[in-house]
Image 1 (cartoon, rainbow, N blue to C red):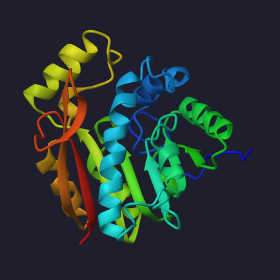
Image 2: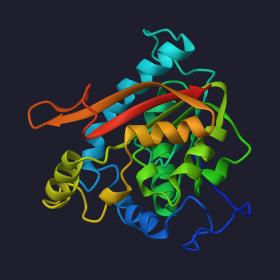
Image 3: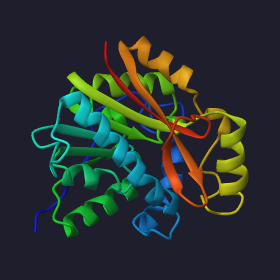
Image 4: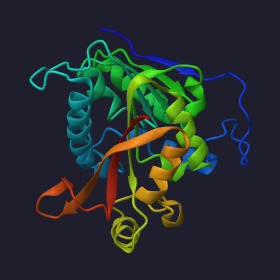
Length: 259
């Protein structure tokens, strides 16, 4: 059985305002998600919503990667020969499927507890994934064909600087795919009042004021020389669950490339 690997970023990096040691990390955010590490792979646990959301994310990533890299849509391992970085990987819910799609996957997360669980789960699954504890600074100087960052930017200390870090990790000709909640009355009602209020999402997970609109994210990407190529919404209904949508009011995905 192959082993996953875990690397802790020990290179010097500027301290954030919270003293975290990584300029992109907010310590209380890392602690919040680290406390859920043991339940991350439980589809009925505190990360249940992520389990339901993951197939939609994967469908979108596969669609955009197939189009951008001219991959074989019938292939079971379309990312073979491609390097992949998943930023804010949690315990590996997205990193593992990306590895199964053939990518050489590096995955980083601010919570060391998540990385420990991710490493163990990947090892049990026979998957080799380069797991690292830290912020986006953990891959400074490295570049990847595909960079994914799902539901993370709303939790970082400086979103614009974080986007710059993501952009720097994208190789020439590469692809950046992000997702984040939109800052709308609908997202406040659905994600905080209802989901957190009823315990479907752990309380304190979101700060609505830190949600980012598609226009704001587009401006951040443009400032670092990236062009948005596709924007797609994620909608939710009690009958069909999460689906890709033309509506951006709740949550959205963005694909961007270097201009």
